[in-house]
Amino acid sequence: MSERTRLLNFIGGEFVPPKSASYLPVYEPATGEVFAEVVASNRADVDAACEAAERAWPAWRNTPTEKRAAILNAIADKLESELERFAQAESKDTGKPLSLARSVDIPRAVSNFRFFASAIQHFASECHPTSADVLNYTLRAPLGVVGCLSPWNLPLYLFTWKIAPALAAGNCVVGKPSELTPATATMFAELCSGAGLPPGVLNVIHGTGSDAGEAICTHPTIKAISFTGGTKTGARIARVAAPLFKKLSLEMGGKNPVLVFDDADFDSMLGTTLRSAFSNQGEICLCGSRIFVQDGIYDRFKSEFVARAKKLVVGDPLEPTTDQGALISQQHHEKVRGYLNLARKEGGKLLCGGEVVSPPRRCSKGWFLSPAVIEGLAPDCRTSQEEIFGPVVTIYRFKTEEEAVRLANGTPYGLASVVWTRSLDRAHRVSANLQAGIVWVNCWMVRDLRTPFGGVKQSGVGREGGWEALRFFTEPKNVCLKLS
Ligand code: NAD
Image (tube, rainbow, N blue to C red; front, side, top):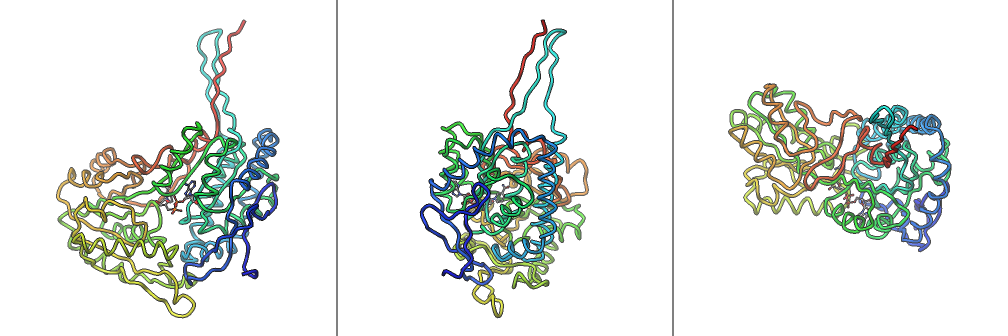
């Protein structure tokens, strides 16, 4: 045990052990083995992080915008120069293919910092000239110390998506990555320090949601909470934080629909729909897990989609030929397999996949599952309604546009949706009628960091991205000035 890597909290610019001396094991999903241990923080550790952040805040708040932006850019440059080391760590911690961590996770973390370094220099507030002698103008001040809580599926990508705008706007951060994937956030905190971020401006606390997470969400110093994770957790955070009047941004789960109309560009649709179903083992909140296909092309779609899903290579995340790595944990592996059993009981037919895969050599005990396609389920059964968050999609046939929209909107979630059609009229009509925060037409996961990002219904409250994020991390104050 003592030879394992120990991932410590990063408070006030240095690594510190936990007050409780407790640690949690960190598993490599591809091997099923423990490779590190991470601090299990409690309230006392969060107190220390909040104190460090509070001490650092006056100087950080008063640092000129241009200087803050320069530090954020230096962080981005340093991360880019260490892309390979971070990609290796991310793949090991999550089980995702190394190729994906190299091409998506870490480059996006770099972009998050570059984007907000630039955005803060263009961020402006409003002025309302009321009459010849009265002027109203809005000051937008940073909030103070904010809490940023992120999940395990895109660890550094989502952690930086929160802390970059928070820091750019002049806040100090107490951040908590998922206890399942603590590695890259720990490395990143050290990297930020090396790039010139003053001590205490970014503090990383590790531990479980119920201990460390909740201590952050209820801490009197924390002015706002930016959370990404499951809907149940979001509801819990809202319950404990709302009475304390903290600002909340909650990005939560999804059960995203993909609507494929007869007139879709079939080849482009097929390749992208395969990606939207199974990228990152289906462990992306934006994955399209319910696929509705119009009558005229349903049979062709079914046979070609299943044939392509069967060809996806499930295996060692380090192999360049691997399409699908391991699921995040044994518990999650069991949860996803539980849904496959439930689907069978609910009358679903497994067209392919859903088998436990045991790749040779070092990965033989990892948590792998082949991509599953299910048909024949009622749209209102549990498998069709609940978020599975794994390599499982359900497919359905529809006849009319009205039916497709009704089915797509028929869950408590409303994060993302995808529409495949060549008709411009239909694209606009359907997009307007879908209950979702994001609609992709004839594409998926095409991202512009200026656009509002988030969900409706049980998928979220608030928006991230662009001005939305900078507005969230600042408090507007109106000044009304009457000239004498
Ligand atoms: P989770 O809700 O279990 O955990 C997310 C984070 O919150 C972790 O850091 C966790 O430790 C912490 N946490 C857990 N309980 C807490 C509590 N009571 N108080 C404070 N913090 C607590 O989610 P997960 O399993 O890590 O991630 C998967 C979920 O995240 C899926 O539902 C997925 O859809 C969602 N997700 C959403 C988005 C989005 O942008 N909407 C993006 C990625 C993932």
